[in-house]
Length: 210
Image (cartoon, rainbow, N blue to C red; front, side, top):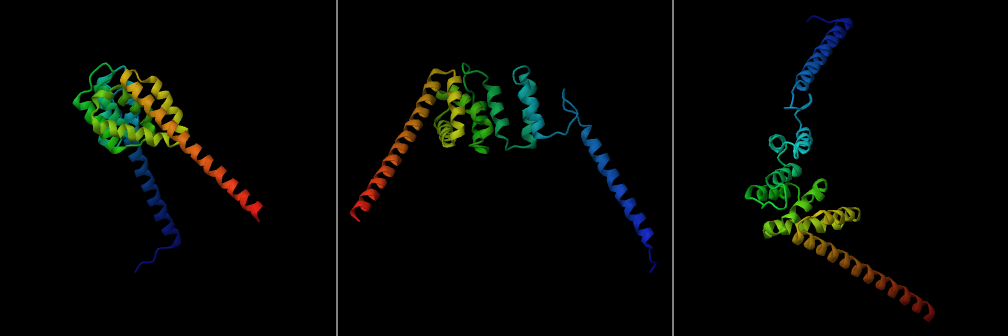
């Protein structure tokens, strides 16, 4: 068997490393050459499509829909993309919520029922169309609000969202729900204080008895 000198092995390893590096650079260069329609040169990632779609919602809804569908093709569990489709189908509270928008909103909840990133946008959209949601979507929205309220730092987001709801019935419903949650918290806090005070008094009485 032919023996390879240490110098020969080093040259082989060095050449292999250069070949691998060259292939990596070529692959990255080819990927970077992929260009989104009307966008910068970048990889076709779901977040890229989402960002471009969100910026196009108001100015070019048709393009926003195309980009959103591309985002879903890459990542079908994107709650924000499904929500955007619902918004594109029913862009204003004065416009009836169509079947496609209702389906897209339902899928948004299915893939991310408590997704913090869409909390304000989804809650506002849902309550702007509250009477058209149907019982299932209403129940999912209520559950989302309750879950968010249980996280103290999210309460301010919910209160601000309630002020932005344009539908009178939806706005009143959300405000009433938030008030009920706050009252329940106040009742629990009062009960805890009473229990704490009773425990302290009992301990004090026991000490005097001894």
